[in-house]
Length: 337
Image (cartoon, rainbow, N blue to C red; front, top):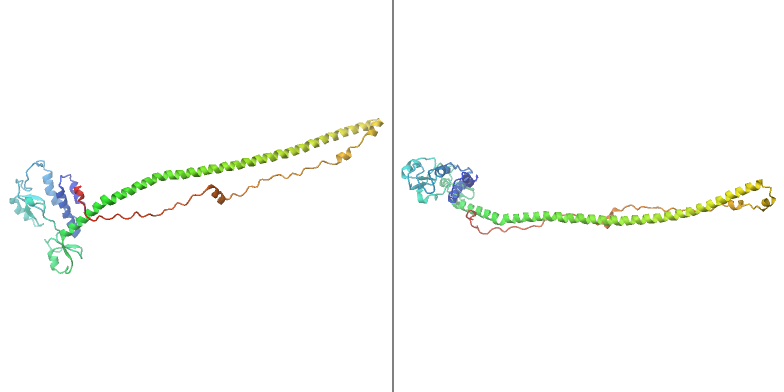
């Protein structure tokens, strides 16, 4: 069903809440029974004439909407037109609708009933609960609704309006605030999320730095031990080299002495010479070195993870917030707030 209230307000008329409610009731009855949209042209006709006339103002006396006669005593509740007695006759001759003429003071009191689609010029004032439709008195006489629960249509509409008002009141004053509260909670959770995960990242980085520091200590210790072994090994080799160089010098000197004796005529020197070849035949011992090795161990990621630490799984569980208890009684009308 179209928004009748919005339709009236869209014309920027200074309509009273009573006029709007009356039009809305008429539209709901029409739509609930025939599922046809209400033609609001007849409603607008009188409103446009009275609201947009530049000669009219709130202080002007009421005039007949057809002939401008002052202080018309009657009002057509069907067409929403003020009527003088002279204009009533021609107006009611229009049989396109059932005109409800009432004293001016009682205007707006006539309920609007939908026309029966099966019986011409009959209005549906009764509601059949089993068939869920509005019917007229002739429909009842056809026995098609025999044994059914029959209610006055206005009572049904009034009950539905109260239910609508109750729903609107509950949505506005109970349900909507709860959802707003949930939204605020989610926004706070999102803000806290940045802080929390930032701390996790900082902790992981700090642990990584600590592990790097311990590994650097181990690496430096290994380098120190390697340098010590290298220095010790080099010292042994230097000692052997010095000893061999001294022996080579002695051999060189012996060769030179022997060559001199071979060309010497001095019998004494030749007879006094003692051979050192036996001494030099025994070669110096060779040091057998067992070189150190570095045997890297295969990195065990599981053990490393245990040393580093691990993250627990991210999991989600639903915690029911419960239900909002329905309102037991209909509160005051939203339009009066």
